[in-house]
Amino acid sequence: MSNNDEICTYSKCIEDLPEEILLRIFRYLLPYKDYSSIRLVCRQWERLGRVTKDWRMNNFYNNLSLSTSPVSIHWHLIDPPKKFNLIPRFSHSVCYVDSKRMLYVFGGNRDMATSLNDFWCLDLSTRNWERILATGSYPPPKCSSTFIDDEQGNLLLFGGRSMIYIDDIHMREQLHHELHSYSLEKNTWNLHKNLNEPGPICDHSASIININNQKRMIIFGGCMIIDDQYQQSTPQRTNDLWQWTNTWTMIHVNGTKPEPRKGHSQFTLNSENILIIGGSSLTRVCRDVWLFSFQTNQWTQITVNNQYPNDFAPSNDDLSYLSFCMVLPSQILITFGRLRRHPTENERHTYSQYDFSHCDKKSREELLLASSSSLPSSSSDENDETNRYSMVHKRLQLPLINNKYNMMDISSGFQMYRLDISNLFSLNPCVTWLPSKSTSVFGSPSRSSLYYSLIYARSEFILFGGIEKRKLCLQKHFSDKDNRSQSISGTLAFITLSNIAL
Image 1: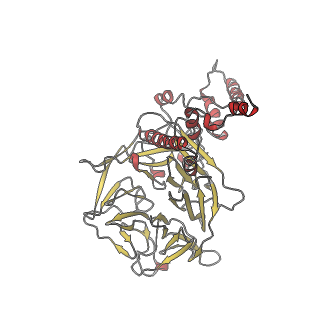
Image 2 (image 1 turned 45 degrees about the vertical axis):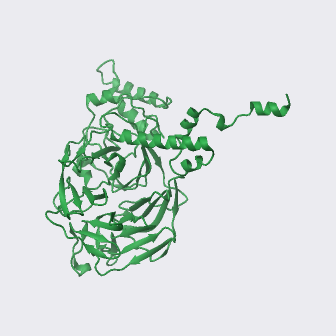
Image 3 (image 1 turned 135 degrees about the horizontal axis):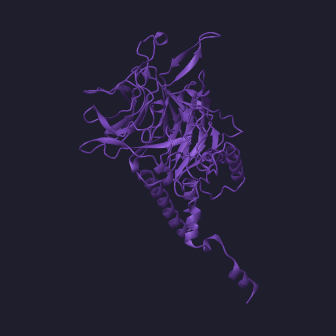
């Protein structure tokens, strides 16, 4: 046997691995450009790539929709890039474009008195930020705008608000009525002028709907200035419905309308219906859900089940400030809010084997410190408290990988809330808040946030920014009045639902 024959006999490559190993490796790839790349290698990889993609999507949908089975919620936190001046923000505008595999972010608030107009994109294939330097009629600094894909190569940015200085000391709120479109192909901003526009508006909702093969942007509600004297008027909540094609038109509504509101979420269900949820009116937090039909031009209020218990639906303190996103194949709306209760004994047992090894170091340390209250003590003497904390610190020095911990009374971080909308078009239309997937979400940002953005993209959720609610929640005797000062969150989190940390 020649030397060349020996080399050929003993040389191995990745293609020689069993398909089970390749499938396991492919599961850890990001579901964007990586999936497209492996399908170009060979026919075997193309087939395994399709299998992996189907597995990931089915696994995500099943874990999302099952109402009783516990599931691991994996948080992947990424700090803002140091080489870019990506300022932490809240009330910003985001738009996900699946064909580009990009998340676009515009403006927002740096603090209560400073608005931004920087424009960024996040490449979901590499998790890298890039600032976009576009030409054309650039939008002014503002927050609380709507930013959506018109599905024709443009991103539509409408409305918003900002704070302007009247003099060296005093400031006032300014609402915007401009409609800008950003061309993905030309990298330019265009300003659309129309005399029939709704007027200065913010905190409204918007979505794209295809009616008779015509794309229309539909906006609803928000805070609007009605008077022609914009600078002298006070913003008022509205329940008007507008559409934009190449011109603005107010939609005439038959029958009852939803209560005027702001800060709500809106979704296009099909070519005939849109859905709104959440927000706040002048007197209350809106826990109702409404469906609008373009066939009849009528609003229908939908019955909401399980809307008040804290373990099913978000609390009033958070609901008017939370963003919702829709996962159509599962017909479920998702949001993340603070957990407002402690786990029951049954839940302790159910989640006693939950694997927290994927959490970040800080979350694991908080978990272990809190678990000190449940460590067994040999006597009732007060000196046992010292021994108890020494045991905790010893456990902190042990390897945390593949360890399993008991779920304790911690209510920090984000809880995932799910609203089932699968019965919207049944004989008795209703939506239902489903039981929580887990008692608390470990590995999430150390403090829960409001005014963040939440996007669903290819079997994962993307959460960015917000205002952190600083609250001491590891001790039971603290009340809701013990909120500390608020700060801006620069958190970028990718959230997956799986039995393994993808």
